[in-house]
Image (spheres, rainbow, N blue to C red):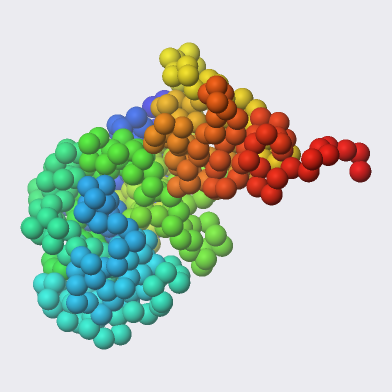
Length: 450
């Protein structure tokens, strides 16, 4: 990046390290799947940390575990609407669905009973399940967002039962190794930062423990580095290799629930936090464990991401730092859009394009890259969606109001498209075409002055 941009990024990191009183901090900006800039402040064992120094990921672990669950879904081994009982039978919260556990709407208690799991040696699944035999549900499943570390311990067990191995072995084989994240591990190896608590009223440090969390480990066990977390940041942005399809990652980024405690600016998808900030839509996750803070975010539109690590229990505004790094990068060095070039399309679809009407409201149907369709109001306001083909004259809605709905093309006897049927709404070439199957019919006297 330009020296002026790099200085602005380093200055922002430096201010956070000082104001947050962090023993050390590292951060990076990610573009096009690569680290475009990284910087460090403070020290680890007397030297500056680098892009290969391990820090704890904390709850960013959840996002990576969520990718494992989505792989099971894409393989047809489970449905997100399945009750947990179908895959992990016998729990006291078996009515909560897989999708609800991913999105923290399953109603489960936030923390596992007993000693606080983040600072205590964890037991196995049988021990965790037994501790949840009573009073595990704090809210009606599906009724509200209630962040649950326990839910991800449960999802780790779900993965283990489907894969016939522990969750971590599956994670290494199916996610970390394919993405080249060799420095993401359950315990520190090689160069790593020690976790500290900073005294609130003096510049003193106290070491924090980092035990194995056992069955709760899928909620926050992993350690990682700038380089590895940059690869994961790119993954969240859609550079998903063969681990998941970009469409599935986009589904993970879609808002499943809104955190109403934050004035509707933050929500949660399927294993990913979603934020809105000054017109930006950001996806990723924060992480905290005793002695550590972490964050990864990516702008869905620009593709610019940022990540941050600190080895302190509290202090730095780790989320705000990541947001600011993205903003600085995009404001000072905005990506140039790809040049427009003509591309070959299925020319038989051209007869579908152009002006359609839902009742009296005009819409445009366009061909867009990837062999898809875009249907949007001419005035730019209202219900708009993209569609991908699923069969002859059938298209599936991908987003917006018509997500998941089927668009069907009705044709005349000569094959000319006459109308579109979309979730019972009929679109016609002219407003309320009497020759089309308009619901309720069209007045035989047609249009008039009164």
